Image (cartoon, rainbow, N blue to C red; front, side, top):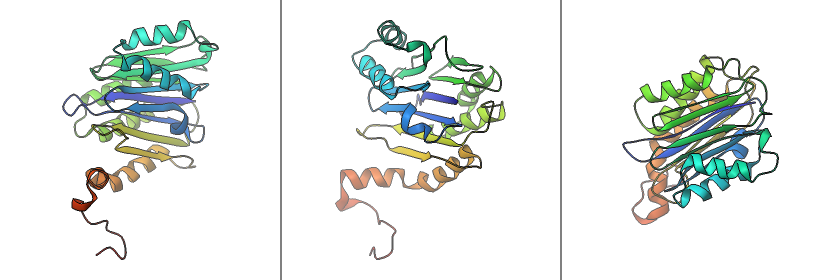
Length: 224
């Protein structure tokens, strides 16, 4: 039902995730990110709490593969889950339980990991990782390019309807948290359009939070 990416920008240290699915509101359930800690996804038959547990574990310098091993050894119904996690050093690990749905696969690259289930073919995660590694620009843009590559490689076996993008940096909250919760069109393309609107304002919103007195104009009617 889902294909996703977790990744890190080696230049800026930003970390983020992106996801798409035939199910509604996939990003609300699957992807989590914590500034200064890492990013994680819990998917397939999703338990959103598992991504939070993975972030709790790597926060205390548990390696991603060890974090997944610990979670797998002590979690009920883990055979239904598919997991990804990546830390601030760009180290990543994945897990797919034996009851993961349909065609499923994962792939780990440099500062990136991708995984999916109910895929059109098992090459989708590898295509996503390669697209990320070969891309340039800001992390959010590269995540979206990887998602587009996944869709081009076949994506999910059925039509996808929702997508989401999440990026954390130096502040405690996500600097990018964008979602398309349902569409009968292409949710990844729609998410990309939303990103293009939001991209020029990312730093403005951070500055407005940190120091409103020196922030730029809000650009809305009635704003002097």
